[in-house]
Image 1 (spheres, helix red, strand yellow):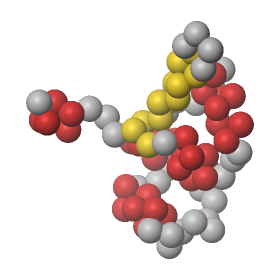
Image 2 (cartoon, one colour):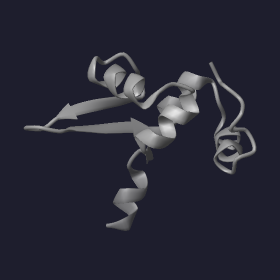
Image 3 (cartoon, rainbow, N blue to C red):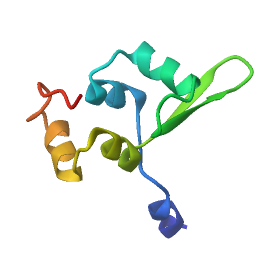
Length: 83
């Protein structure tokens, strides 16, 4: 079963994605709700929303490599905006 999970696209949390994008959390979640971004979706439940953001489409949107992303995660590039 672990092999099945490895084949699934890697997701990242909203808190990481909005910082990477250089926008507010509200802008990201509203954009996902309105289908404005090609890297994730918002799903409405009875009361709350769930957000799914996939890493590779997000990196493609930012024109960012996985190596640059890993550097950013380590804090080496947090000051750089990719917009």
